[in-house]
Amino acid sequence: MKYFSGSVKTIGIVLLLLISQKISAQNAVRDSFYVANWNVENLFDTIDNPNKNDDVFLPGSKKEWNDYRYETKIYNLTRVINFMNGGCGPDILGVEEVENINVLKSLTYSLRSRDYVMVYRDSPDERGIATALIYDRSVFMIDSVAALHVELPTKYPTRDILHVALIHKKSKNKIHVYVNHWPSRRGGEEKSEPNRIAAAEVLKASIDTLNQTSPKSEVIIIGDFNDNPNNGSIINTLHTQDYDCAQTEPPKENFINIADKKFNNGEGSYLFRSKWEMIDQIILSKSVFEKDKITYGCNSFEIIKPEFMVFKEGKRKGGAIPTYEGNRYIGGYSDHFPVGAKFYVKDKP
Image (cartoon, rainbow, N blue to C red):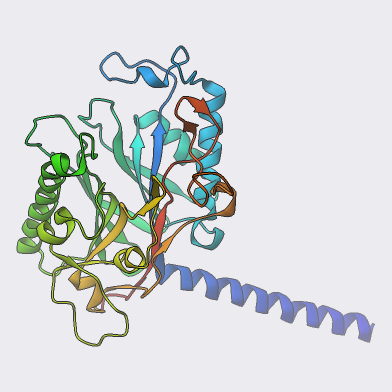
């Protein structure tokens, strides 16, 4: 009986330690959060929308898009999203190239490991593709939503910028997240550059207005910018700079591009003609570096590359495996790698 009694006591202590460790881990998660962004590449359903140019992704098209391929796409995207943040999934995820609310529902509802909800607004884009946000409502609650219209010099319809204000439940701090998908380089980089500058101006104007009413707002800008960190729309219009975590002086510019360092090292989120481009980025307001309410986990920015979604050979070796190569179905994930970063929060006094 003494042996049995001692074993029960030992088991009890072990269980208490395990519970204590689990609670500590949960508290650590609540004191931090992980933000990711991913252009999921043509997440279309199989239903014809007569008001949008979605003919390429219909069962009768050259791509032979069908329910099986659509469901495989959802499964593959889910697999990558669950891989993020050390297998815990992101707390906030910006997505680009979703056709409508229904495909976003399919994706969000497949992410059963977290209590995810979605934010979506229809897009004026000719194809119907839009930006959206998915977040864990056990970590955040929504404060406000706005869709910022971008009028291009060409008057061609393009994606809105999604502005979502979230409240971190534990710290009560507010975070402004802007999800972007700027106009493509169709027609050439130089010819199309004014379109991306127009998008950058709309974004900057919104944040400038925000700072007039709420100085030092915590802003996280994510998305597919179709420009690199050194292009004019990013450098000259937003006025971004890179940041070395070892430096002691505060940043000079209002926006810090945490994707800059990896881009300067030759890395990227998108492989185009054997050249890496960092068109998927995370840009932060200067206030995030002032260590007041929300702090960037220095050097935590990463290009998310699970081995299962990487080409191992061929001309696209090292790049992301997409759903199609031209019209040939290969059943992959996306032609973009996701990007992500970690942040820490402080309780309000």
